[in-house]
Image 1 (tube, rainbow, N blue to C red):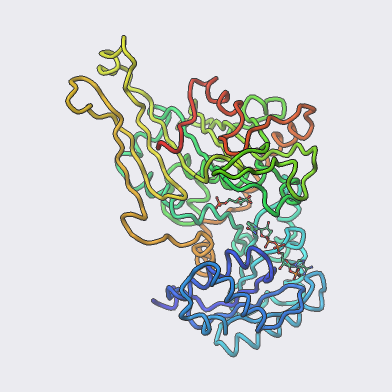
Image 2 (image 1 turned 90 degrees about the vertical axis):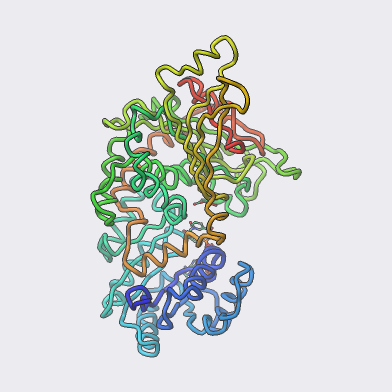
Length: 498
Ligand SMILES: NC(=O)C1=CN([C@@H]2O[C@H](COP(=O)(O)OP(=O)(O)OC[C@H]3O[C@@H](n4cnc5c(N)ncnc54)[C@H](OP(=O)(O)O)[C@@H]3O)[C@@H](O)[C@H]2O)C=CC1
Ligand SMILES: O=C1O[C@H](COP(=O)(O)O)[C@@H](O)[C@H](O)[C@H]1O
């Protein structure tokens, strides 16, 4: 690989002792190393308050990689690139020590001043860190400087604007990489390929041929140890404002003129501007929410949300959201985009179902009019996770029976064809950031518009006196979610059968 593909980089990891670093970032950086995408000219400086030293960090990195079940042949060599600097990020004086340590290590590892600052910490620190990095001259290196920001990017539009203003004091928009890990998923990245590299789909990709699109991201897990965070967030802010909306944009945007970052972003922003605003008064017509009660999942009894750690026993926080988005432009007018996400649901699954319109006249439906019609709508299913692939559901002839049809599936499963596990989303995104490719990161305009869309809905819910609808853990959400589609004449397609 050329040097361009093996960037020489220092990564300053704020929050090096935390959960995200351990579960996602260390295994991802290691995978980049063992797959040859990182040169030997890289270092990671971990920062947190704990009084660790280089060796303690290395021991923890090794443990994280072992726990991720990755092959450990190169682990010693890899860990020697890790260094630890204990400090409180609110202590301004410590940033000079950081700069000095970076310069020493850049000399030792022949790194030309390229620096990534990865904020794997609580969001209240993001602004302070960015400003201190600038004020103390850390960002004045000879190479490039990039800032990676974890979610949540704000809590609503005003807080997101405040955070953005703070980080923009120190970094320009093109130096900022706002992580949305769904944009790093293999099959989310595949949406553009399916749409723009196949002659059979693009002509049909509009309101003349598509009746509705359904996006589900369901989880089996509850809030685990994140009750405190989740209480202030809820499913709408945690999943819909970012991950689900990003999938809607990739499905609905016009083809970019080139696959360049600015072109893709500009198409996403254009379609986001066409998403119909929903006022607080209209919120209940478009979005419904729910909260899980106790139930049984995979033969295990699980508690209700209100009994979880750090959760208010009278909490009205939603753990489930189902909603309808309308895009008021020529391509999509009249086509609902339904989104649904929740915790403690029946299965862990993210799928997109594109339902095509029925034929204006179908001789097989006509023929079967008096019987139960066996014609199935054509569906394109994009399996995002845990299985990765595409299914096209067509109608075929029922074997032996003249004039009777049966739904047939054309399946492409990614793992069964390639026989390999696809890279972790974080692995791709860290690598993209090293290469300076911001296509799969959220631009400020996307974040800005998405909060503007979501805020009236969360305001309506926080002002409401109504109790929240409950759903039993292990189900697909409250009945209201089914009704949302029924009133438009549709139904959620059962994911386990697709
Ligand atoms: N965990 C996950 O799966 C996900 C996390 N995120 C986001 O990533 C970020 C980090 O999350 P997570 O790793 O779970 O959080 P943790 O609470 O596990 O980690 C927080 C880190 O910040 C450090 N820290 C806290 N205060 C200070 C301080 N004043 N100075 C220096 N270091 C400090 C802690 O170390 P110490 O105590 O030693 O100082 C620790 O390393 C958050 O923004 C979260 O929303 C996003 C998606 C998923
Ligand atoms: O960002 C988040 O995503 C996870 C779900 O991610 P996935 O890749 O497992 O689908 C969710 O559990 C978490 O609450 C949210 O913050």
